View 1 (cartoon, rainbow, N blue to C red):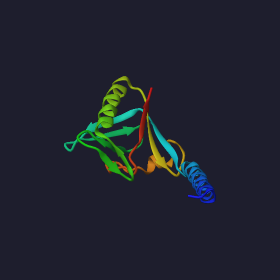
View 2 (view 1 turned 180 degrees about the vertical axis):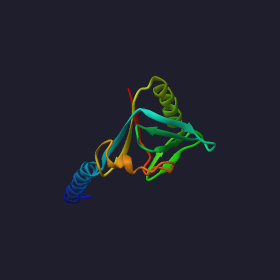
View 3 (view 1 turned 90 degrees about the vertical axis):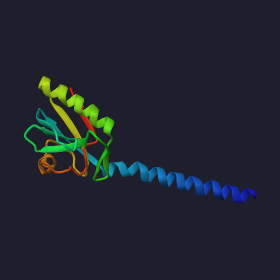
View 4 (view 1 turned 120 degrees about the horizontal axis):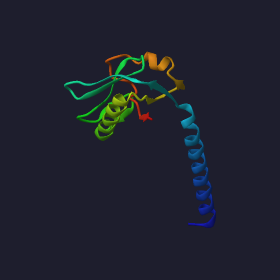
Amino acid sequence: MTVIAFKHNVRAISRMVFLLTTILGICPLAVANFTCSGQITYLGVNSASSLYVSVGSFGIWPICNLAGTASNGGSSVPIDTCKAWYSALLTQKSQGSPITLYFTSNDTGNNGPDCVALVSWQVLSPLPYHMDYQ
């Protein structure tokens, strides 16, 4: 390989790295998050091992599955995460402490119209990706 060809390849690779870095740096800005927070007003598990929770005055949502990975809307919740969430939810409910569920969306905010729009007893799309508690 000649020196000229080598310099050309280095420049081309540098441009590609710059372009990818720029694109990847911008993409996360297009996705925002919304949260739904409050006291646990309902907690249950059905015969198919789906874990249901209601936060505040919002609907009753299946957030994961205790028997296997739950997937929907491009998100998934592994079984071990679901078991950890269930344990934390039981503790939080018994203590009367609030929780916050985090969802990926084009919108932002807490306890806004996105929380109201989540339909009760139907699989959420997307599923929550994080649960926070105090």
